[in-house]
Image (tube, rainbow, N blue to C red; front, top):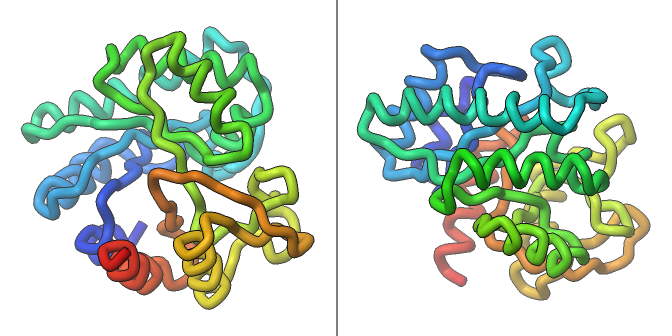
Length: 229
């Protein structure tokens, strides 16, 4: 994304695409260099093999194949990071893979196993913060897999705690709506859902999508707000 360089000074963690939905070796190398220069933690951002759909289309793939695909992508990023004296600290699945694993127990287990095996306890899995946080944490503990629970600044939530489908109007929040959502989350630990209900969320990290309008400006504001909490 063209915002990579501008946004680095405002974030703590950079999710770097590993080639299946976006990115290529040269882009990955440059993104890691930017993150290293800014002191930003590097995360692998693997996806379904869907370049044309930017990884935002669901695919029916067997669990063993999902594991191999994730480890292939993460391994590629780890190799490029190693060559620059950097480490990959966590894995955050992208797009449809991320959304699907939240609702599919078999897929979630495959993703957890993939990260646990390649990370050997030194690499966390970043996953959506939902009301089912404790149940998911127990699943990860069985694999000795560290978790980072994530909230979203620029996406609307359903009443049951998932992300509203991008196919629906209003699923991606405007910069003003994102600011209001983050302010509410910080002050109350809750977000407002698509029906107007309040949903409690316990999160470790906050996501801003690089392709959201005003991404750099949002990251700058949220960075300032979070550092003053």
